[in-house]
Amino acid sequence: MGNKQTTTKQDLRAVRLRSTSRAALGQVTGRYHVHPHRIEDDYVLEPSQELGTGYNGSVFLARSKDTHETFAVKPFRLYRITQGQKRELKNEVEVFLAMDHPHVARLRDVYEDEGEIRLVMERLEGGELF
Image 1 (cartoon, rainbow, N blue to C red):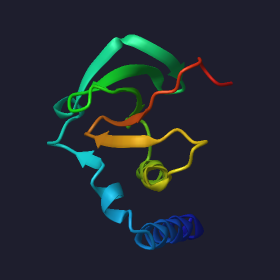
Image 2 (image 1 turned 180 degrees about the vertical axis):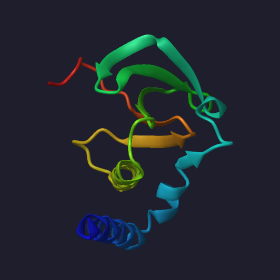
Image 3 (image 1 turned 45 degrees about the vertical axis):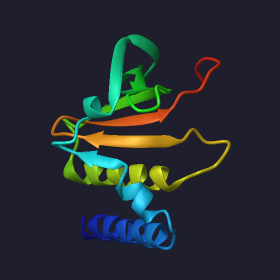
Image 4 (image 1 turned 90 degrees about the horizontal axis):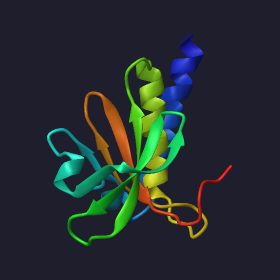
């Protein structure tokens, strides 16, 4: 049991070290939004326009209120997961926010409230990947 928690703490420290070693730290933290900042403040959600489905449900379309660009929104429900699983998810999201690679879909913003985390991702054309 103690080893699992130690590993999680070590993983978190490693994420922080990777993030602080980049000039993009402000870009990462500025794109992870928590309540009271809501996704509806920045995007027009279009849940009736389903782009695909995943393990946690439907991926749907959203439009930026500022730029009018379209994005894919992928929700992750937070009920029925442990605090450790939630922490691991947040660590992965932090790493994903810091990534910038032409062959990886870009994570634009993250919104967390008490019930779910929503990932606003680059919208890719051409259908689902399997």
